[in-house]
Length: 132
Image (cartoon, one colour):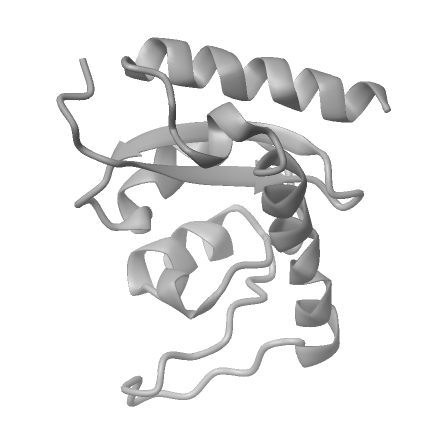
């Protein structure tokens, strides 16, 4: 039961802007908590993410997997590392997907009472969007 708390969504979108996988998190949780289960078993070459995902643990895991992280640096990072600024421009596909899915009233307002029904609506809407 959701108990009146908001739910955060962490989503993985492919290079064409289609939903691959999503995960529900409690509203007070940071998005980094959902990254490990979200990317487990998914092959990729260069994941795109925003500054919130600039964490040593994630960068090390991506390096072990042979992936090139396209994640801009947080402003407080002492050791600078390069990232592909041109490839980062394609991160708008994630934002575009969230814009598409939030056109559905039940998703945008988090109308459902339980996480299970909210996740079911996400799956339903993702199917509708993919079928267009």
